[in-house]
Figure 1 (cartoon, rainbow, N blue to C red):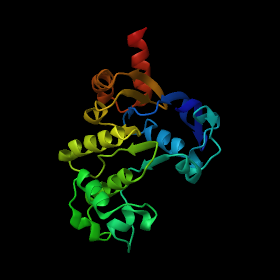
Figure 2: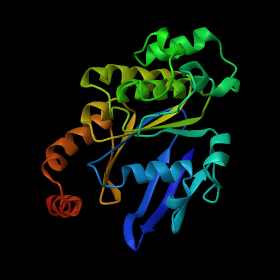
Figure 3: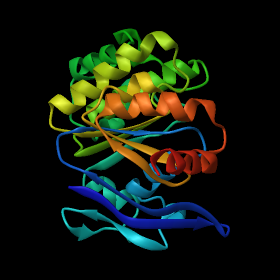
Length: 245
């Protein structure tokens, strides 16, 4: 199990996360839902070990062991990785080299082809360079394909629809389900209720804390009803507390 236990984070004396706790069991699909600026991507960066996002209070635990002090590389060796919101751009290497980490991943041409196809691209892209000749959407799909190639335990997809057209929601769901079917715990960061419904458990994040959690369909409906109308996270918390008082 991967856990965030009562974490709080301050950046430049501003509170970003406040006494936040989350649990991610092995082999399940999780969704972290919320408006922009509520702390979702901060949570993702904290889980993978980006130094800037190390909590001042609380900790990150894997199978009961405190891994808060471990960096990105050490956590990757433990099986935790992320597909960042910004798409990849590496001058001079082919898509096949990128997908196989320059040969470090022992995978065949057919393995790479299948991963690309699941991400919505054909095998011709294996010969292309991962550079500015590709669109943002193409680079994003290649990054998603690269996640499929890794044998990881926990995968975070940070806004996986960023830079991809609306028609690709089925592609994103296919990637989530493919990863999960191989035993990977998938944590999807999103502000889209359509994506949030494809999960086993959901957390609604507001103003750096968990506002609600539970069945994804219920959380997505609550989010659409309350949060879509509000650009001020603190007001969401206050209105929710009044409604439940």
